[in-house]
Image (cartoon, rainbow, N blue to C red; front, top):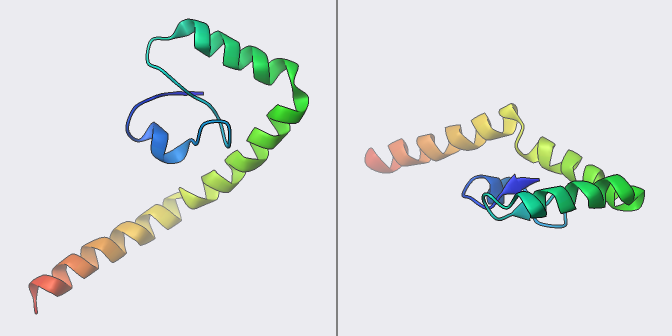
Length: 79
């Protein structure tokens, strides 16, 4: 469960691998916790999808992606 701000929305897709709620909305936060607590099938689905996101945003993959971005930038400057 994350607040609706940049960065969080990039990783968490609402109702797929978690929930995106509006900032400072404590009632919605409580509701999402209750949904996960009371619906085991939903919890398992979200958890399974979250595990896929963890791999996508692993340190290794992020560093590799950033390395490619910087390499491409510097190569274009040398042309």
